[in-house]
Image 1 (cartoon, rainbow, N blue to C red):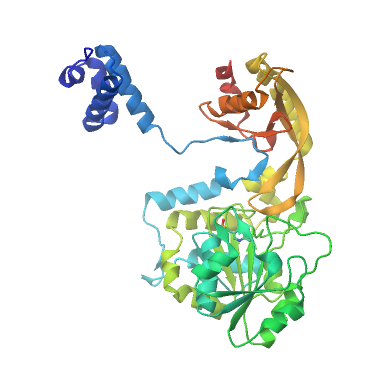
Image 2: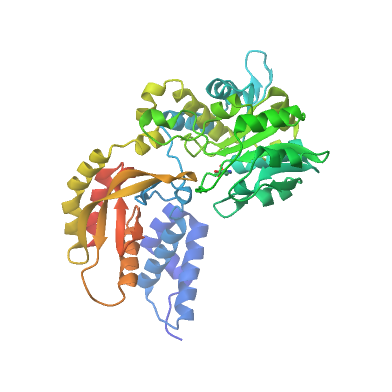
Length: 455
Ligand SMILES: *Cc1c(COP(=O)(O)O)cnc(C)c1O
């Protein structure tokens, strides 16, 4: 066995005193022991300095925050794996206030009595959607689960075969139905479902008719789905509620900014839907939330479901959501103030100009490792919103020099090098190149500042 210093000798070292000041005694002692154990396992000797350095490395790695800012240059604006919507300043201020002190969360300040946390956002949600009532939960998956479990437990819910969606792996309509303890009654076919299919399905076991927005795919060709207003009328003739899971749920018509139309909760309510659910952190551009709007009596039932408590939203996100909803009161300035909308509406020529500014620096940083060019590309909105509509954008494209073996692996290595920067740069590999879509590049200075490390 090679020579190693004793623990007490290491702890007496001046450099270790600095580690204790930074991380505390317990953590530092544990790290010194870990470092010594590692040397022992590798049958390696180490002097005092090497041991202190190894302990410092253990501590640094363990205490580096796992919440890391990254540059989202994937070309997907609302990227679920990168946290979806960035929040506006107004939401950050509101969330900070809620985090750092007591707030009137479930408290009626005027009367001095108990209140309801939904009151923070209900009035705004009703104004913005035309609904009678609203409630909010953890996310849209929770909202769908809660709607179904409240209105259809032990009974059937009729859904078109063309709308049995899966979102991001874990959210699948048939499985949510099971977990909500109701039975899925599929009607129609994958491509065509008619009003008469729904009508034929209605019987004593049926508790609701439901429409699910096919947010991350489209069925094209010989297709048919009944209109929402017709489904609502059919449901109401039989005394049944008509539910819509809208998915992204933009609160304003995106066509106003030249973006493709995405169905809004206001349209769904106007078409006669009794409850409509949608996400807070997709096109709405707010914090993660599941919003349910609709008929007052049905929202009241939802609020009484014990699951509502299990799925409720916390004060920090509620405060952020309220601040975001208030921005919608002024649609004229929304595209400047709401980051999601600002990124979605960034003009292609502005993105190209940014690319021109960055091109030389990126090429200089990469040297001969890759050829760098500025090329047109298409960004995606993401999060299952508007899957086939792409936004014209520009990307810095990195291509490997011609020839050589293992090109695929070397391209992966290049992507990994960009990800290993202090603020990782996340691009997308396509067509034998690494694409850095600049649409979401806000912090240009920060991006440039760390490029030197690639050399
Ligand atoms: C995104 C989506 C969901 C899930 O919403 P989360 O907020 O991610 O929980 C459910 N249904 C549809 C149609 C969706 O697009």
